[in-house]
Length: 325
Image (cartoon, rainbow, N blue to C red; front, top):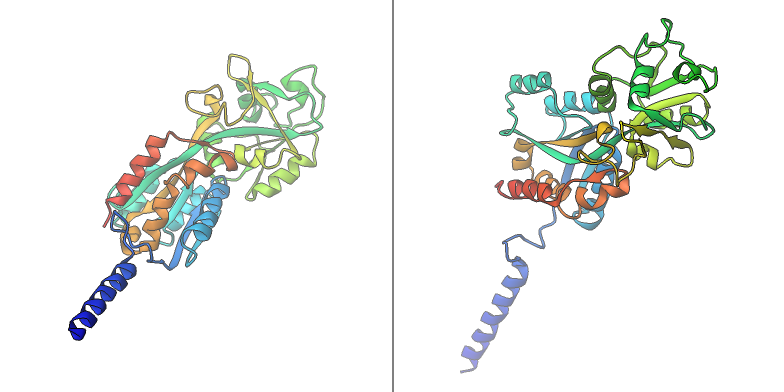
């Protein structure tokens, strides 16, 4: 009798230990399963603050055994690494180009099958000026476009503010922007300027921090960059209100969007996921799910100067990722 009781106790204890050890949730995910390894992200300098914030929260709150490394080489430079298989994700402030898709194919990778395009948020291209500039606080879209196009005002491209409007100072405009490695440059050149040559006097930089410093130190400076870099440097920069035809519009989270008042300078920003790596490396797939979860881009976009997409967009991405074995 005593032996039977002892066996019963041991059996119950064994079942309890087994249940605790499994720690499964309703969907079968192992709560006690801590991941490890690295996730490599590179690409857009514009997207960098958002992706870095998502990575920080993920490592702090979800998987402290995973190292998410986020770079900011620029959209074009990031795609080069991604195509060569050097990164798990490639951030971009513009959509992948047909030539890059062809390069992926040459390496045996197909969009949709091996690569997943993820729209992260909306960004507003922002024209920034020195805080002491009290004349060019409002400009029309046409004025902004023309001032950056070579030969619009002068053959030598040494454009004066007074060339834009006679009542403005007769002082040379100092043009700035990110260089060709960045999707922001490509968006401005290809979409806003319609691929017309930019003024020869423009000073293009790799680092956004350098652009912020240059504009903040020059009363006659103007630069184009992502809204996030402006909103985190409002103590150093002022934003130009842009008139798209219905009056001046200030870039903000309330005006940036495809159907909102700042639509003329609104663009999508992306990240691209190597699906083969997501299937091979659990930490990569897990991080991808976090990026599109309620705690990822949806929650953190606004904190980093981006307008979030509709919740249904993120939910659809999450559903796709959860179907990956």
